[in-house]
Amino acid sequence: MKNLLTLTATLLLCACSLTNDTEDRLDLTSKFKYTWNVNETLERDDDGVIIYKAQPYGGLVGSFKERNMPVDWSGYESITFEFAEPTKVLTQIMISDNMATSAKPGVTTLTSYFDGQDVSSVGEVALQASDTTTLYVKSIRLTPGGAKWESTPIWEGECKFGNWENGFVIPPEKFDDALEGDKLEFIFTTDKDDITVNYWQFKTIYNGTDKTLEGNDNELNAWGCALVGKLATSYRIILTATDARTLKEKGLFVNGYHNNVTQCNLLKKHYDE
Image (cartoon, rainbow, N blue to C red; front, side, top):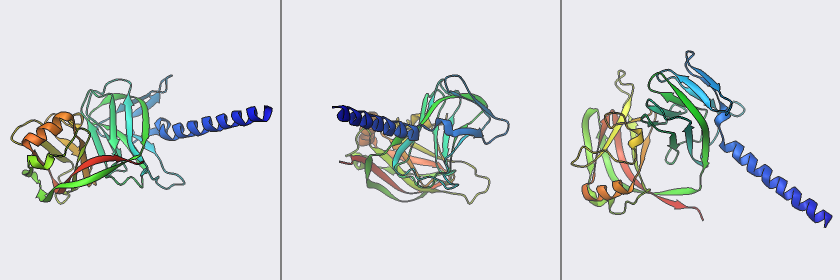
């Protein structure tokens, strides 16, 4: 009996240790230790909340290199910043300079999803603000993977947005299979030929209306536009129930600023068994 009790205790300790190790790998808060702008400051309060006094598009930065090499996040689904107080300005997550996810003022969480993105070589992650502000970051966490997305093309071609000059329509019948929780994925390259252009945008509205999709509402600026990174090659929107229903009725109109779009896919989630 003594040996059995000892073995049980040992297994419980091992299980707890494995759980703690997993939690430690997912909790990235302690990794964020410096800023990109020398005029910015950060400190931690007694509860571990990061108080980040930001300048426009500086950055609260976490380094994730191991042995001076970038890490592979391909097995994870997303990274989430949780704020102790609602944000007051537009904020965004930048991952290794090539992936941006933004949120308009007033959010308490900001998540960047990895599906369709190359996160096999992540060196740095930065949280940025569009204006001078103070951000109170409660936690920063990775979410494990476990889902695969089946991709069906619903539009293919070549649309060069230019300076809001061009756009394209996806008709309602292409959304017959769309459900709440599915994603729209736009495949594109940013147009970097004009050296005066230093930002790139998407605008997605129900065709024939001026109403933007609900699924990316938190990411939109005052003009209903979503910002994408300079080196980004895909942009995704998680559909709400209203999005799925309205797209089946009206279809989608897409345009933007200096992106060259070649494909739009409907992504449906399938979990590993």
